Length: 304
Image (tube, rainbow, N blue to C red; front, side):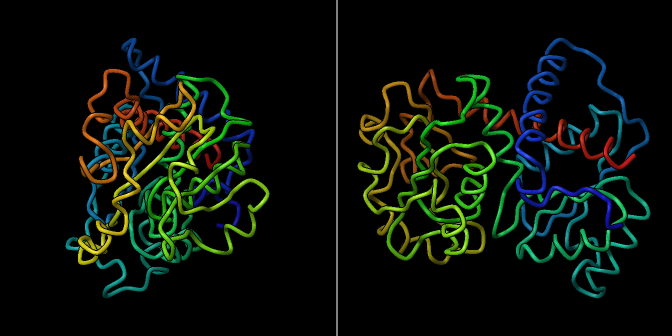
């Protein structure tokens, strides 16, 4: 099992491999729009393990696997013994003996690591409390489609130092851009990740200052799944961190803005920006489908 390739974080692939995957995603998107048959993996089965609810992740992986000619199997905590009556390690051995690839959306990052360590097939991290690497593939694909290479550019994260923010730290390293993080005091991302990437990542607490010179501004909800009880308290703390036209006026004039969705309009991002005619947020959402197809193709071929 040790030579099986997984995608638990952006660091599992080299910068060159990630670049190739983005180009392949763009190519597969074009093929799909042209109506080309992409069913190159007939009979392959994707096991989709969800401990957290989802719209985009489920639809994109299920549709993507169908377009590749395979089948996707939805497994919710109500339907399986994963992490309840059976150790994760045992579930990994059993499930991986019956499917060809697995995606997991769960809470603790250790869960996907333990599952992958005992899986005989590729495992994809479809979101944990620590990281959301699949979303970064879609975000980077969106940037490349609209602006070309992101190397040497300046990106600003505005909001909570959550799993998306931490994935942007890894992306800064792998895609070679500078990252400025604007968050309220006490809501910074993981200190070890910041220290390991201090040559290209900085944190400050004034959004208008943080976005100066930014080519891309990114945000996410202020309270992630499992933090709903903190919503009101967070809303007060994060109010100055809304991404809106005023904040974007401090960034570069042609800066893009992104949001991984679902968005709370009028909270972390203004409805005005969400509905702007030139927004790339809807491209970003659609690109989850194409980026993940490229990812699944890469992993299935690498482990064939």
